[in-house]
Structure formats: C-alpha cells, structure tokens
Amino acid sequence: MTLSAQDRARRIKIILFDVDGVWTDGTIWLFPFPIPEPDGTTNPKMIEVKGYCAHDGAGMTLARLGGMKLGIITKRISETVALRARDLKIEFVYQGEAFKMRPVREIMEKEGVTLEEIAYVGDDVIDLAVMRKCGFAVATANARAQVKAEAHYVTPNKGGEGAARDAIEFILEAKGVLQQCIEASIDESNPLPPSMDIGKGGDLK
Image 1 (cartoon, rainbow, N blue to C red):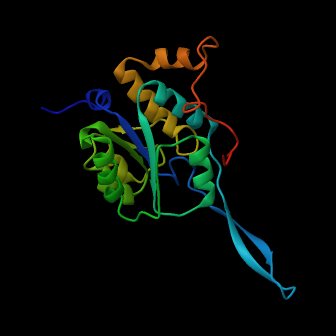
Image 2: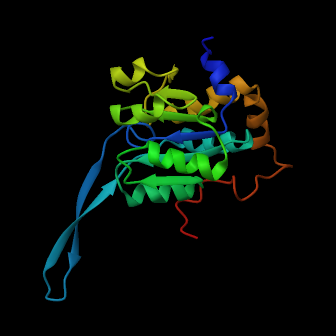
C-alpha cells in the first residue's frame, strides 16, 4: 500500500531541516573583518552572514504547539546558524555533518522515535541520504530536480522565503491541528512557555 503525503505527515514527531537553501535562499555572504595583531598589523578574518525568514521562525512555535521537536543538520559550520538555532530554541543542532544519517540515528536513539516519525526538509543531493529513509521527505521549491523527484511533498515557497513554514503547516494540517496551533499562539490568556517563546534576537543566555 502506497501512503499519501498526508498519511506520512500525520505520523511525524520530529522535523529536521537543512539550512542553506532551506532556512535561507542559499546565498552565503562572506565579509572580510580585520583582526588587530599585537604588532599593529591586521589579520583578515571572514565573517559569514545569512538571511532568515521570519515566517519560518513563527512556524517553529506552531510546530512545538503541535507537539513536535525540531532540528537542523548542515554540512557547513557557521556561528550565524548557531545563533539562529539558539534564537529559535531548536532542540537538535548538528553542524559540520557531511553524512546526515549519522545525526539522524543519534536523534532516533535519544528520542526513541522511528524513521517513519521523522520528516526531513532539503534542497540538494546531500540531503537524499536522509530523504530516502525518513517517513516524510520534503523538497523546497528551489530544490534540485533530483531532490524534488524523490520528495513526498514539494513546498510552494523557496528556501528563505517560507519553505520551512510550508512544511510545518502541511504536517500540522495533516494532523488536523493547524488552526488550533495558530489560535494557541495568539491567545493572550495562555502565554507561551519560555521553551516556545522565540524571537529574542539571538540572545546568548
């Protein structure tokens, strides 16, 4: 029996995301930053900058209100990604991962979930290793053709323009709780707990 995308989405407990091309549009800005040395010279260091979508961030709150946990798995190592993940209070953060099934197996063992209960959102061929095995594979609108061909769902929006939010809302809609989560997120009489209250501007505390 072939499961529909909605059937697959209903089982999801954890949503994992790639970063570049999923949380962002894939652009990586590198700026030289002079570091002063004791001898008075400067040593240039590269500062990496990325842009993120606020709609995606709000979607993380909706996902948690829907009972799900969130994670990122990316090959690059970037302080801006660490700060954004901290700002959004992401439960699982893996950087420098060229082979993405390794952290997936670690998450499964830690959380006691199966592959069928994990969704993965990707855009490039490095993501196929997880997408081929997880319960719900999502490709962004800007994903490579090979990735879209193996996805259970392709988001209407591109990475960095709401693709992560698309994936979250599809899953919540399949579970029948999307509107409930939206209403809970704006209910003044029921303030969000600190674990769900995102948007502190990269607060390091």
